Amino acid sequence: MKAIVVAAVACSVSSWAFGADMPQRKPGLWQIEIESSQAKGRTMPPMKQCIDEKTDRQMQEQNLHAGPGGRADCEKQSMNRTANGWVVDSVCKIQDSTMTTHATMQGDFNASYTIDSQTKFSPPLHDVSESTAKMKVNWLGACPANMKPGDVDVNGRVFNVLEMQQQRAQMPAGGKMSPEQMKQMMEMMKKQQGAGGQ
Image 1 (cartoon, rainbow, N blue to C red):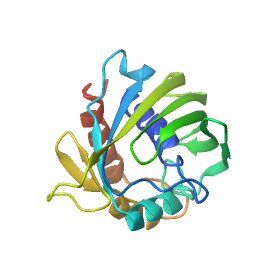
Image 2 (cartoon, rainbow, N blue to C red; image 1 turned 180 degrees about the vertical axis):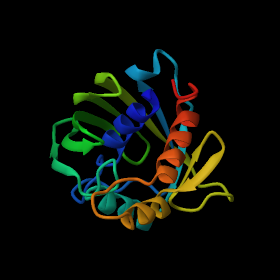
Image 3 (cartoon, rainbow, N blue to C red; image 1 turned 30 degrees about the vertical axis):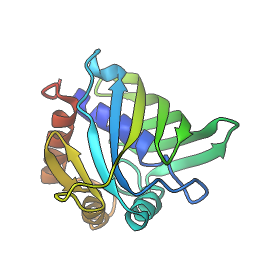
Image 4 (tube, rainbow, N blue to C red; image 1 turned 90 degrees about the vertical axis):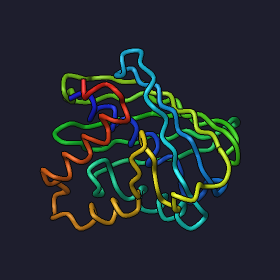
């Protein structure tokens, strides 16, 4: 399904976008808009993420050591400072494919920034060999009362990223998702993509 490809691209860009040497994001509610070549011209519904200093640091540390499958399945992850921002490169395994991503980040991590990425899959993942994505990330203000740090709102469905990461950390050796975990991830991505999984 194309939805899992969109999920992989989003993970490859956002999960490792921040490291120990990068500035902390401003606590509060951040909105993430993703435009992907796999969305066929459709704009995916924006995600909203509530963070504080502690949870943002936890997510950074955990994501730097976990690939899309929730395990340390990335053979390369590098971040380099440029005159205008940062460049991120990663090579990770997802299912039976190798995902190679190059991303550039620019902007103010206290207010608004963008991430542009190019991803290649070898062999193709669900018939997709290449994908591009652009993320626009904006600080909206304080988190609403119904969201706690670590929560992400996708089309009205709220889940906690740190809790999901803890569940993935308990997966058996090999980093394989259970059918139920895969189903939950696919449902989340379908809602995010707004394309019925197509």
